[in-house]
Image (cartoon, rainbow, N blue to C red; front, side, top):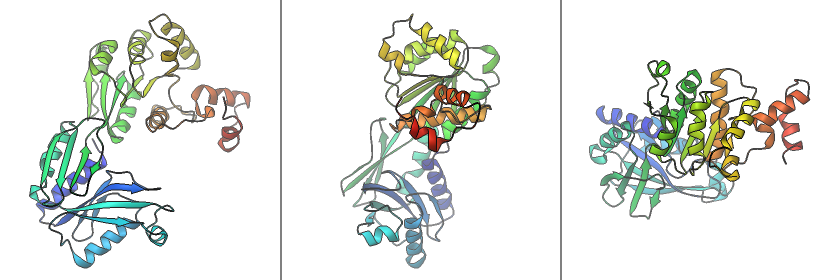
Length: 348
């Protein structure tokens, strides 16, 4: 798991071992437009070195300048704000009207970073609570629906994989897709009962299961923070997973395949106990149309659509694979001009 949280934690532990003082900086509240969400964090070393991100760079520059001038003198956490006035917003590169409230926390051996790192390495979701008066830290379990909580006396942040992804098939495309999905902080499970594929699967950070796809979907209890993609091209596997996943509240259910295969798949799925509304949730062919041909390009295409769905972004119709390929055929294989077609044909 190469999340920003993990990188910040690893840097924190290295710098503690080297005897540095440091600050953990966390975005706890935002108003108006803000470049980074609540919970974003960085660690700032006493000599100005930094890992992580809380803005486009200008606020980091100001914090680095303050530490280089005055060192890390804090003994307990403190709260600072940036972008309160229009002048400050311009100075610190915030969008017009944007304001950010940050907590600056001095890190010591008692800050629980080693324990937090070990929990994240096990794929756990952890709530870290900071007492603003004393700097004391407690760690406990969290749920996927928990968020950042701050009330001036206590700060609770959530760390670990917030979203899950189930990938059906352990082939070459799955490798590329899973590698990027891990970088996007998904907890990735790969399901493939086929003997010839499982022995060569070696993508770090993923969990491989060999149960049948429909059983895997039921066992995982896919929820609103879950995505599932079928990649085997084998109806005996893909259809089993889809018929169960489409009944769940998963935010994304997609299937790889051509337009013809996708149409045939939908006809097969009608034979199962699925409503029209459930069938309409199927993303197929999965991905957005970027002319992808190679496995890495197809993986990016699919994950782009997954990301849009996760962020509740409604993509224009021209970006659907089926629609994009049709448009390209109509225009005699000339490249699609997104600036022209995406606006000319949005309402389909």
